[in-house]
Length: 114
Length: 114
Image 1: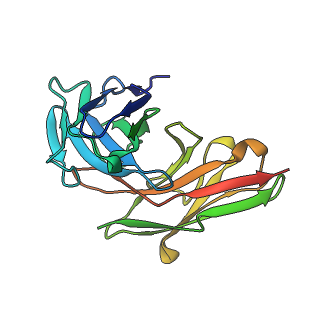
Image 2: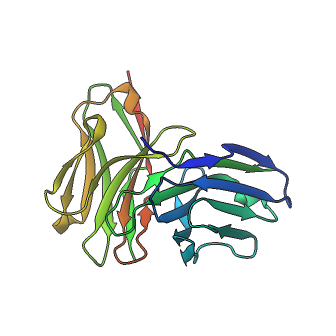
């Protein structure tokens, strides 16, 4: 069964450093999402791509976060500089285009900022 | 805007007892509704979903949920809890339109006592 791949699984970084997360969606899925999940809470959408275009980044803190999906396949989420409050799990997900489709999640990348 | 309310952040049941996890949603259009399960340090796995048609939806691991439009609810049930059901459960509502995405509730932690 195809899966959404994410790396790294775990990352510890110091405050003010840069960190990046990578995601490879399920083949054929044009829509890609990045969610952030703070411990004890539900996931919240950071950014949504349709192919290589951003369609929703309204909740992305653009002063420090950036995301790209240059060829419309894999994607990178970057944080620079990292802050203590960025400690969370970053979940990548993908789906076929259109409402009602199942959104499949990767295993997530745990970030701890010290 | 859509929202999800999960009643009870923590539910504890005995092994073999009925599991009932409550979810109420708010949506201005006919909703797409999902339940996901998350085991520690892992991503989200789809349990079941409702899009159209039959309002009683059966999912994996013996779980089912019933869409009740009049009550704006989508409660998750399982007749007999197993120790392996201990996990965090998230209810989500999917938006319609071109920017299809999920909005999650805060989650319910299910513990199963022997």
